Amino acid sequence: MELRVIEKEHDVLQIELPKAEETLLIPLVEALQAEEKVVEARYIIGHPYLDRPSLYLRTKGEKPQQVLKRVLKVRQG
Image 1 (cartoon, helix red, strand yellow):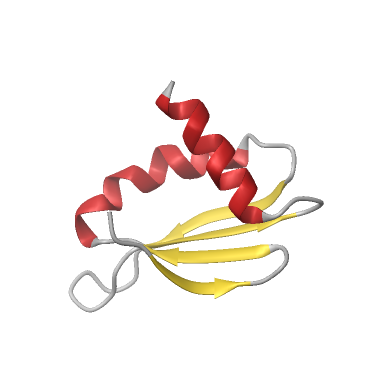
Image 2: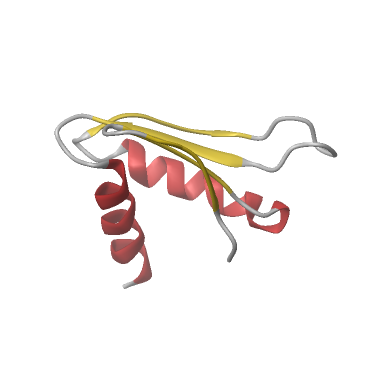
């Protein structure tokens, strides 16, 4: 899966996903919102023909990349 990082800071991560992966965003955001360190997790669809869906993640006390990796590992197993 090809991801593109749109924004990456100490506590914020926004990544763009391919169009076909849009259906993954709802369960992923729900799992992220259940995490204690997550302040905000949402997906942005934008214009259906012009924009690719993206995931926005803001955390407190932990890097967003670490939280995302942990949630994805738990969901695989």
